[in-house]
Image 1 (cartoon, rainbow, N blue to C red):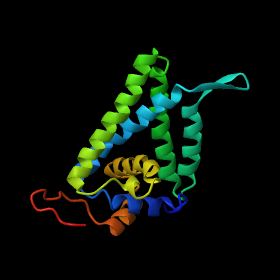
Image 2 (cartoon, helix red, strand yellow):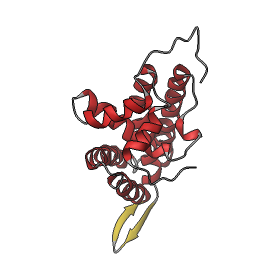
Image 3 (cartoon, rainbow, N blue to C red):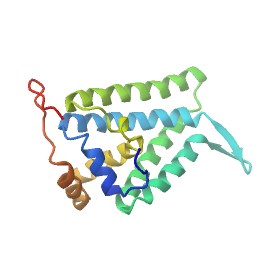
Image 4 (cartoon, rainbow, N blue to C red):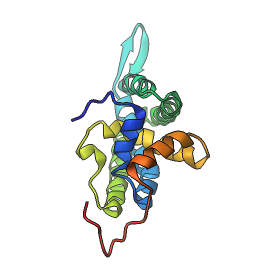
Length: 181
């Protein structure tokens, strides 16, 4: 596994190599937030007290992830990803207090369905998910979706241009005549 301390540009370029089919990218707009939300629900169930205040494992994981996103050398994409993940975790905490069966159903349900959607996308891509070669891809996924969203709004165009210059343009892979990679 390569170092997790690569720059945002390098991480996104490497992740984008696995995500050039437009249908796969669209599935990530749904699947990645579902996975983050599901993990957030599950981790929000682990609560403990620190200095008389309740804290969850979800917020501990968030703090570590936020520090990582914000130190990848591109503050804009790091801050936007941190904000998006934070919003999903805040929503996850809203259901974490549900009865045990409901809490588990919300967490596992979103997590599993999110991954199913991801694997459908990678069928279109004709390639395994990026995390199969580099576990850091699990953290890069939310950053990639954030970059795609911001780029569609006309933001982060320079970073998106660097990513596409390296990984190539997006396309629709011909499923009848797959191109070996």
